[in-house]
Image (cartoon, rainbow, N blue to C red; front, side, top):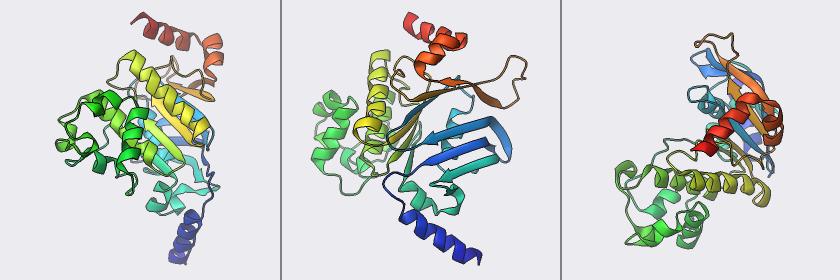
Length: 270
């Protein structure tokens, strides 16, 4: 009976509509049954952009991986179109939800083939356009063989910032309507980082995607629908799970959360 239910769930996943929704409800997210972050309520659907912010080690990556169905929640519920995400085959979930890891792998092959990891029929023109989208047009123009240039093992021939943008370009070429992106602005200068974050948010409007971005940067978040600030309360021990200490639009948090205002001011001072 369990095998029959699994097959039925897999068929359901394959027939999901064009506007799937992931809902994380009253969830604890963590590893090996131990919560790293608690009290999570999050909804992502095409047309909606959400930012997850907070200091390093607070659980942003763990939250994204849980929402993507890559690790099980410790408690609470994670659903895809109303059914537990764990009830679907991983490949079926991946057709709907793409998690872009900060340390995603770059293969020792051509730039084009690295982008075709997202979709096998990506053309050279589509690949070039995606690279321009993420601010790599000038870099691409300087490569000896364009998108046919071979990259070194695990991107050792490119900078950290180029690697991050390459991984985002790969995600943008994927057909999945929901993108969960971990620290896309890492290793980038402030202006480039904000441009990339702004573009990702715009894809939720112009491209009909749902986007969740985990990021340290706050200055490019004015257009997101909601910001979740993760942290620990003043009386919590460093070993206790983090939680959502504030949530709202960028403007609302600036108006009402002193810590959020302070963090944004530190960015502006750099």
